[in-house]
Length: 126
Image (cartoon, rainbow, N blue to C red):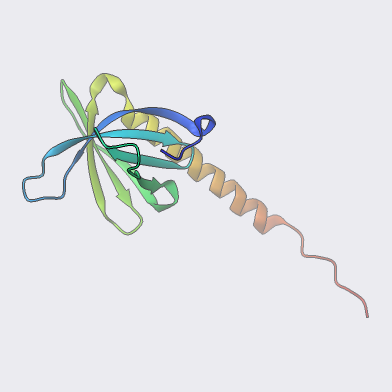
């Protein structure tokens, strides 16, 4: 999948609602890393590239509904697109993604804060 083993937080299966008229649930093989979520259709060949959702392009994750069997959640991107997913209630995929997203956003905030606090370079004298 192009993702180094050391970066993988979790890998497994999720279902994504298609954007087609019938809005069918399709199984996806998913790889969660510290900075992205990669999706590959189930049964795809080895040369197939995954669709990658960088955490930089994700605004938030909303938990929409919980039933006896599934947890339904939506990933909202920075351009306001909504991607609907569901997972088995016991799998906690939504929690894994939410925690990784929060860790990514916290790391970015720390980096931004540190870059703003760095003193300006010393003025050069002629």
